[in-house]
Picture 1 (spheres, rainbow, N blue to C red):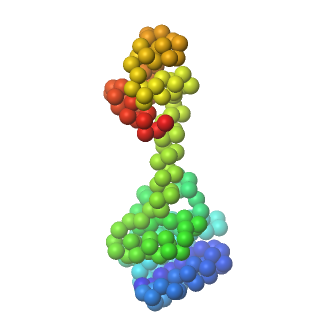
Picture 2 (spheres, rainbow, N blue to C red):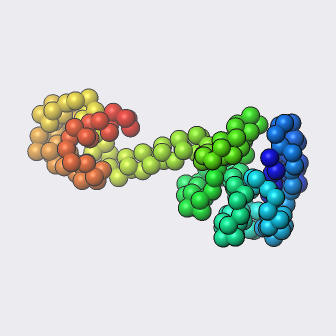
Picture 3 (cartoon, rainbow, N blue to C red):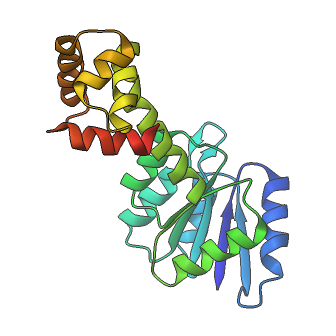
Length: 202
């Protein structure tokens, strides 16, 4: 396997290169610090895989992926980054990257990601997927008012409208109104769905 490491920090490149050098099936490791250097190496067409930092100083690492795909280069591209921003991950996905791993990953996790990608599969760090899913769940709950959250919580306990009304010291009519708002905001069709969702989120 022939690999290119693209990072604007020499110490990061050296550290990653040192880690990969212990892998038996890696026969060549090239380095680049910016988009132009990376493209010069990639255009030779000899590399199997490029590990690219998302932020190369003022440059965008995804520009390398875009250019490589545009030139129909067969080199697979993995983004290596410290960013867990959803926007960055979605941009990478849209750019059709083969992998997305975090810089704080253990060496064996990085090596595992390389092997997965070289087998023709995508690899996205479990941590980033978990974080993004959690943020989406949080955003769903942020749509609800404090009182709607109270009602939502009681739905997860399987309480009826009358029981919720008694527990929260409000009228049954008010509970029905809150339930209706919850279903509308969370784009659900009936209270059973709301109860299931509440059980998973709360």
